[in-house]
Length: 598
Image (cartoon, rainbow, N blue to C red; front, side, top):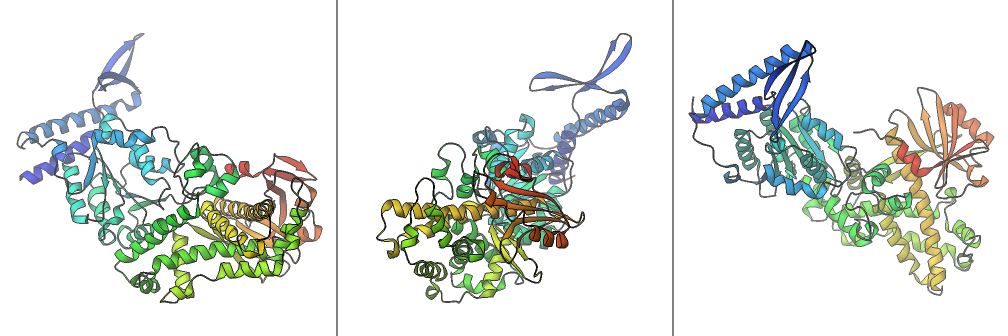
């Protein structure tokens, strides 16, 4: 047997031995009865565990197998030169191993865990599957933290067989393959490769990880931000030999339970990443300002698809974006699409009459404000303000683009944003005219949407139309309009999370010639539905549920969607029942629904 073959055999024996119980079986006689125990040493302490009689023969076989393999390994090592110290291994990439992972994991020891952590944990410690685990999602959604939390839970023995490989743009599959062979030769069982899609040849050679190393017993975890690259690799190379876990979407329940930040308004303003928790979160979060939000769109979203298009070798996907990429205008185009989605959202909230969220209603609300009533919006030209708002939203520096951004470009960018779990369309249906159908786009990172909407409103309020208003009046207008945006965003959040939690049901907005149900949850199998109003309010008033009690609207709904099993108002106050309408606290509602993992 050649030296390389002996090294491979030795590594294989070490892996097999690590899976078998160490120590020995001892017998004790207690009150005349025989009892058998597994005895072994761990961390310099003797351990014992009772072995049931029906498991004794199988367990004894495993102990004997280990001893036989240890004898073979001992004999084999006599013919091998002494292995070099692990810290002297000539790695081609940036590799951390063994005890060096303790300080790497230490900063996250006190962090609470995301719900998806259990899936990663189960893969690492579960049975061998000949598959790789892919952990992917946008920046600041907790991927590396999840890996560090796995390391923090490992025993000394497990950590001694673990490695973390930080991939850079200089690395190639050849260099990674070299390092994985070294790790395999020295008996490493758990290997985590971070930002693996930085390698330009990753997609075309991704099968290396599953077909060679995972198939020989290694647990391989691949992580990175390039969602498209991973999906292409799954389609072209990995097929059914990978397990995908997407981290991008962070629901309210995790925002509160993991970051320890309470309140739906905090989630509306800053939700969407796991960048920071605790005191002063809102001063340093990803979406604390328009500038930091724009930086995130550039680095986490636009550069993501740009990287995918640069590395992906096939022409079938997103081919119309290649001209934009070649002209170095792709990032600008993606920014424009994201901004346009959010700006049109703002335009809808403030100007669509059917929703009663126009500036005229804001004027009425300001007049009736209990604490600071004002007629400021009665003294301005609403038509002029609306026209200025439309122009501000819809003119997007088109003259700066050398390539026109047409519907095909926008469609492909939106398709990619869907793949990122960054946005989802929610149906808007109509009664009695069932032929009418539209949709509204929900952004899954609310802080991103709010930051852009807030900046837009601030720029509007600096317009000359408002120049003659006092500071107090301008502040009142801004707060009122942002309150309207909060209300619409609350609706979107609830629609999105309810839809994700109920994949077998239809979740939609139901509009009538006058008025609407903010949300309907239709169960086709049961032939029934629930209807909801959603209010960004802490108070319960009769006006909130007038549509839910409208007999004609309810009759039309039951004719189309079956028996109404519940009527609800979701709001920021306490749970109660009024006139048969169930008022539910919106935060408790969002914490009660379980999202279905993708």
